[in-house]
Image (tube, rainbow, N blue to C red; front, side):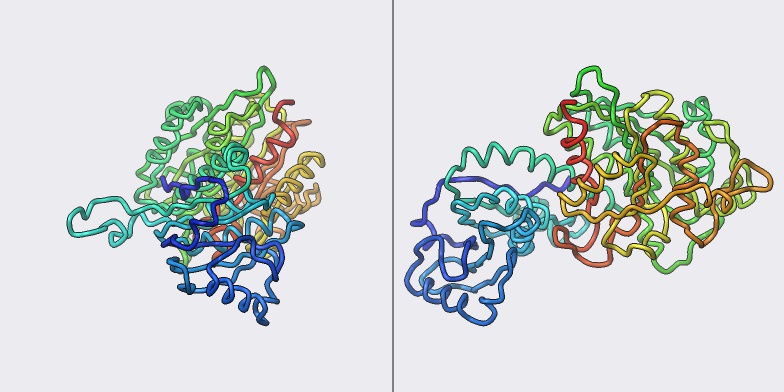
Length: 496
C-alpha cells in the first residue's frame, strides 16, 4: 500500500538551516516575526516578502514560497502563517500546503513552540499522498536499477519537545495509514481490485491484530443472503462478505460498521451511460472506509470493540444477471421487487445489515455507501448525507465530522416516504424514482434495521471521489469517513 511520508522529530537546531539542501518551512506566529535567525540575505528577503501586499494578506494555514533563497543551500523557503490561536483545521491546511509540494527532497520544518505541530504533520502526511502504482516512469529511477522503488520524501520537524510530539504522533500515523489504505482501495482499477483481491487484502490485516473471516457464496446462500447474491449474478467474480473484528474493549457489545463494496458498477441490465462509467470503480467506497477504520483501530490499539462487515460484489450485465422485474428474498425474509438493477447497493446493505444485527447484537450500527447520485444533487461534493433513527448517534457523527473537518449534513427520514417504495407485487421495491432519491434509499435500508437498534446511514457518493483536489487530498479518492469514524470511536465508544 501507499505509505505516508516519513516524519521525524528533533530538537530546534537553527544552525542546520543555512546548509540544508532540500526545502525549509518556517511556521510563523506573526507576519513580522521570524521564528529563527536566518542568513542575513534570506532574512531580509523573507521579511520583505511578508511585508508585501501578498504577505500581509496571508491567512492562517496559508503559505508563501521563496525559491532558492539567497544565503541558503535550500531549493525553497516556505513561510507558513499559523498564529498560536489557530484552529486544528487551519493547522492541517498549513501542513497540507507544505505536503502538496514535497517532491523527493528532504523537507525541514521549523515548528518551534507551535502547539499544533502534530496537526501540521498530519495535514502534511495526508496531502502528500500520491497513488502512482501504475505510472511506470515513477518506478524507473535510473538506468542501473529500473525496478528500484521510487524514493520516498522525508520530513524532519524541529520542535521544542520532540519526544513528546513523537509519542503523540503515533495515533496520527495510524490514522494516516488508515486513510491511505482506503484511498488506495478506491483508486485501484476494477481489473485489479476484484472481490477476491479485496478480500485477500482485508484478510492480510490479521497481521496487525484483526480477526478476519471471509464468507463465500455457498455460506451466503446458506444464510439466505439472496438479495446480495442477486447483485453479483452477472459477474465472473464471486460475491463475498468479509467480517473484521477488533476486540479492545472487554465484554462490551461492539459498534458495527457496514460498507457497500461494489467493486465495479455497470448498472447491470439497467446499464449506466458510458460517459463517466470509468469512475464506477469507486462504488466500493463504503467498504473501503470500513476497512480503513478497522486498520486504524488495530494500529493504534483502540480500547473499543468494533466489527466491520463489507459486502463485496460486482454488478455486471450478463445472461445470468438479475433483471428489472425480478423479485428477490432478503435474509430477513422480506421480498423486494427489483425495479432498477442500478439500485443495487441497498440490496447488498439489506442482507449485511441484517446479518450484523443477528450475529453481533451491536450497541450501534453505521453503514456507509456510495449509494445515490441524488445526494450529490442535494449536497454536492462537500458533505456526506447522514440519516439516522437515533439523535444521539447522529449528533455524535456530526460532531466527529466537524472536529475532523469532514463535511456531513443530516437529512430526514419519515414514514411519508414509504409510499414511494411500495410494490404491487412484493413487500417493497428497490427504488422510488427521482424524487427524494437519497431519502427513499435510506428509508429502504431502515426496513432492515431492528426495532430499538441505534442506526445511522452515511451516503458518501459525493465525497468519496470529488472532481478536484481537497484541502487534505490530491485529486482522486479522499478517504472521507476514516477520520470521522475514528473520532467517533474515541469520543463515544472507547473505554466505555
